[in-house]
Image (cartoon, rainbow, N blue to C red):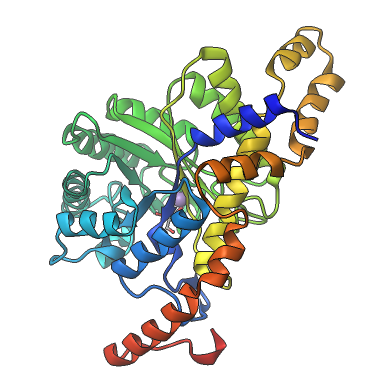
Length: 400
Ligand code: PSV
Ligand code: MN
């Protein structure tokens, strides 16, 4: 049973949580073996903003939508129009994700490419993305690089590092004072010998060298198995260098599974580190809580609602950690009590707090069910398959 004080703590914590959802979570995506198409999948950015609006309407606290520049924009897209469209759907444009991996010229990398012309091409795209961010009123530019090499000796690792230092510094120079540059790391894939920004340490060094508005982005799927992610989070928080997350879960590699579907305790421990830092310092770190998931099989809006609800539940649980008791147990090196304090919070049923929070925000008590009953998905499937036909696009048909 939750005590009133616990409910209050959890509700306050939830009030401080804002989750960003990715536009690419609403379109048809797949694996390198192919795609299974869904009739209700978004076709264009308008559809994605509409879907994101639904997630925010039912789940609450996810008013930001991350966009991927080449997947969502073309030369004719007007940033002010996009910002207006987002507003119409009750959301705003969140992080801008330049695409530095799709063009043929990136075969040997973008910022790390040995060819200065390709490096300039990549930098121009990042600079355009920074301008786009200013145009749509977004604060965060997120950089993920597929750069790396596939064979030992293929290129100089140190020279590639220098090229990155130069490129990131040049990008940082063009940021508006309120923009931040997030640098994401990933240990492998698509490069399989060496990735140029392989872990948080490399991202930390490069961000520091880029300038004061650059920070590290932790994608929870971008670690080797069994890596202690909450330790990375604690370390970066303490250094003032944690910029944001790409949340998802994984079993094997960068699986993009639903947050908390494999190891909810890990997400809880990450949240607990953040809330513990807030408790100790009395400050709220500026963290972009973003989801990076694209669902191949699940219905996309439902999957995103499920994800947001999971984040809310785990964040509420993390708010229940008895910080004073934990400090006391740590002081006494009482590891059993210390661990039990975490476990007790994790295993508490926080439904009462979620109910209070949802009532307060006039959200449905069961957001997933309310969305399912709304008829939005059936209508989206009908209208979008019709539009696909008119556009000559392949459709999922009755297998969606
Ligand atoms: C790369 O695996 C990544 O995590 C980057 O954040 C990309 O922008 C995103 O996935 C694309 O799905
Ligand atoms: Mn990511």
